[in-house]
Amino acid sequence: MYQTTYHRASSLEDAAKLHAGGDDPKFVAGGMTLIPAMKTRLSAPSDLIDLRHIDGMKGIRISGQQVEIGALTTHADLAQSKELEKACHSLHYMANHVGDPLVRHLGTMGGCVANNDPAQDYPAALLALDATIITTSREMKADDFFTGLFETALEEGEIVKAVRFTAPDQCGYEKFRNPASRYAMTGVFVAKGAGGVRVAVTGAGDNGVYRETEMEEKLAANFSADALEGVTVSPSNMMSDIHASAEYRANLVVVMAKRAVAKAAGH
Ligand SMILES: Cc1cc2nc3c(=O)[nH]c(=O)nc-3n(C[C@H](O)[C@H](O)[C@H](O)COP(=O)(O)OP(=O)(O)OC[C@H]3O[C@@H](n4cnc5c(N)ncnc54)[C@H](O)[C@@H]3O)c2cc1C
Image 1 (cartoon, helix red, strand yellow):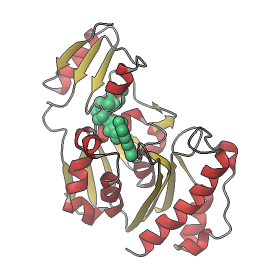
Image 2 (cartoon, helix red, strand yellow; image 1 turned 120 degrees about the vertical axis):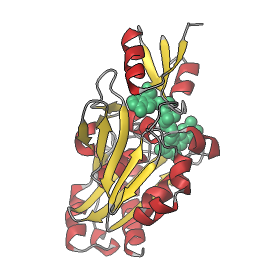
Image 3 (cartoon, helix red, strand yellow; image 1 turned 90 degrees about the horizontal axis):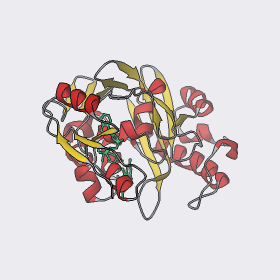
């Protein structure tokens, strides 16, 4: 057994103070990743600082093309938002296909962003949408934020407050789900907007979420699944585990990308 002290933070300042006062503290939001990690002793924080009761960190704010999502917004909030469906149907679709109802009702956008699990869906969406991650001390582009497997640019004690992006003109997301957990065995998010076409892959790369730049170039010239005909992905930088080999994932990246583009083009 180990001792953990639970704290309910009342504000971001309170959360920062509690964090600074702990030996080995951790923030908790939905607890969908952290609590199982604690149960299996992969994580044993001295202090759990609950962010869920902090005002102003939950909700979807859409103004014109600008979309901002508070870190405490749950997958279910996103899945139920008609406004989000209109602004970015693929993110809405993604939220509807995260895990199971329990995970969707407790898990949060901020928790997913901070955790950067290589099989999570959201890192692919945020990278493809060229999103900005807003924290308690700065704003960072997704390109700079997601740095590796379970790694982000977050500093100790820094809290994700929200994410912001410009709604794309067209977008599509397709994932090949792990049939047990429903995490992405491979997921591809494609977005076309004023800045061009971005293709982000989750669940497959051995360094976590990444962009498929060759596909981006081909799709910039011809935004259709046909443009990806003949494109291959090398298995050398793919994950290989009990769920799927590197070769299988490399093939899935192409298949999912084609489906995502077809979905985007048909919307
Ligand atoms: C059975 C199962 C199936 C799942 N399937 C999917 C799936 O299909 N797709 C998918 O994308 N995800 C899936 N998930 C993960 C789920 O989406 C969780 O929401 C996510 O892992 C973490 O969110 P959370 O709010 O629960 O974070 P927590 O577990 O509370 O925290 C996770 C980590 O993030 C940190 N953290 C949390 N919030 C913040 C913040 N605002 N600022 C800074 N740090 C923070 C915590 O300190 C901790 O280190 C699944 C989870 C389970 C258990």
